[in-house]
Image (tube, rainbow, N blue to C red; front, side):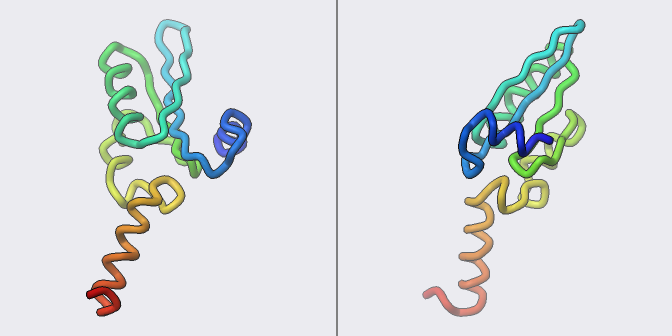
Length: 101
């Protein structure tokens, strides 16, 4: 499972890691990035070069190349995958409730 592997590789389950796996001509590479946009940028480059690419999020969801755009949306990332997005939604909810001035 990706979550267990992420913990082993980082030694810290709280550190966000996006795992980019690419396969081309029987050669497999694995790269790690801490942000979704940076992971998608690398993955798209690898796909353009002819690799079959996937990205595993910190929560364990796996995205293939045809779903990379979804990975960059708030709907594609849950709170564990992108804490800043969750914080932004919480701030907006507080503002909507009149708790922020």
